Length: 535
Image 1 (cartoon, rainbow, N blue to C red):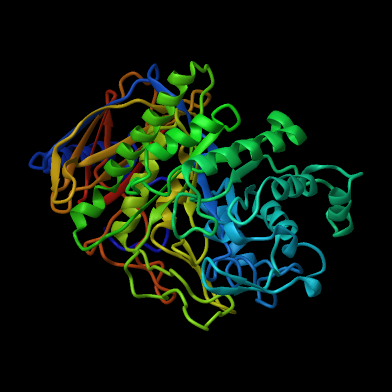
Image 2: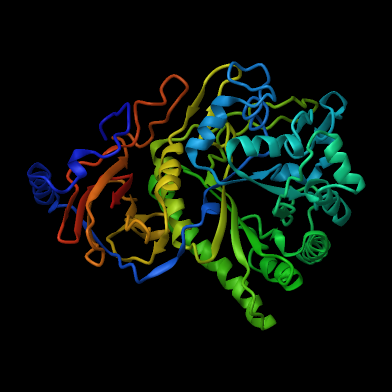
């Protein structure tokens, strides 16, 4: 990909309707004949389900510098009167985030929500056992709701079912959502939040099958407390709440599958979602890393099977959906910014601050494609996390905020995936992953906005060596023309952005795109993410 300093809204080479564009298209077809080909057929009659804004959620945990010097830094040149970094707020809006899960994560399993409300000078300092840090509680529930409103996102709150339980969950719900007239709702008003927060999205704990989790539980123990907590919360707010039970911590856990069955056997009637968590790492074999979308696809199918098994056994007409509320690329074995230990309990240390490559961004784009393809069952998702900690946004204390490579496919997909997700017929050559076997080289999804007629195609070429010729049949749609075609790739897929250079590799115009008689053709570079918009 040629370096680009800006992103044109409608590259001329991708727009059909001129002689030069058609000549470029013909040349592109001729040059692409030697490349392996993948075919895609789309039809508006075959929709998987709606594009859900909740698919584009993120995650803010009290971990490392995600909160302190991430979203919150009093005295920063861009910060407002509440201490929120204005540059991060601006990037959060540009990223297109819909929901933000808070305050954890592992952190929530030892958290006392009361510590983070009231006058800041009176808030207690605590040890955070999850990340071996010191928590000042200068940011808490009311503060985060204030930040959420300024960022234009919906808060997705998690309750502590590790060291706490039912009483604390209904207490924080009363504090948050009742207009007034009770001890806790009046306390919120006294603390400066006159109007109720009206939080509807709640996670019932976090990764409770993980031995690393404070208050780790068996499936039977957790399923019982999750059901009891859900029933008690609904006694206050009824069906206005959307409740997420903890699924297994990841698909590699020995508990996976049986955990979902047991938990849902206890809580199926009381919850709306079960969570899915999965992180993907480049362990040194690029082909294995680029197969992440295929791995996520199978993981989702497995969870669906476990949900539907319980539904069938219970003879229920109710559907429980998936909240994929932790997903990302994570260089888990990276020596960068390790977790403290021993007697060292620092405040907001730099933890898990991965630098993401072009290949990582392609994988993130592919994972979003996979989530969209399963929009019938995945009703919510959260990129973990938003700032500094395995994040698309990085900040320097007192300094600049900048975009990692992964920012770009997320922002563009969030901005342009609209309407319905279409079920595509795809035929693709495969490539060999040593760990995962034969994997399709093309990963693709398309969305269709019935109101405007717009179609957007998102595609990833997972091959590390071969360009891929894309041949898409869109003849079922009338009156389309290409208005924008962007690709994200680089000759060095291991290039990563830094504070000093975050702009020399950006999404750039995809040359040689042709659209003629309902047939779209393009050549996709190896290790590339591409978006083509037609209107």
